[in-house]
Image (tube, rainbow, N blue to C red; front, side):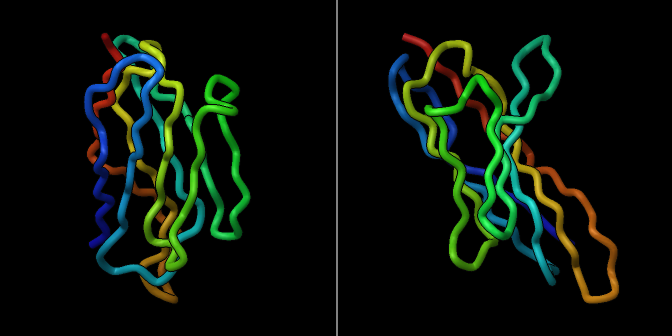
Length: 121
């Protein structure tokens, strides 16, 4: 059993910052790419940023220069530092990871439960 648990969402004023965290736990042999997606009301879920276990990153154009994705040394926790937040960044943010549970298991894709980020004055 693998779990992704997010934290750090909340209400912030425009121009403010938030830091999201997502910790993977359970039966984990290896974690490959981890990432953050978001879904605003009435819109499709979209990629925000992702990071490989080698540290390569990829960002949506809308967040380049504002958001930074990183992983801890154990590579089981992924962070999303969000600066210069705007009302259009309001969404539920979901953690995503490709995880292998044992040496004989295939790679499976997992989602967290989501954390609400609201940018409003």
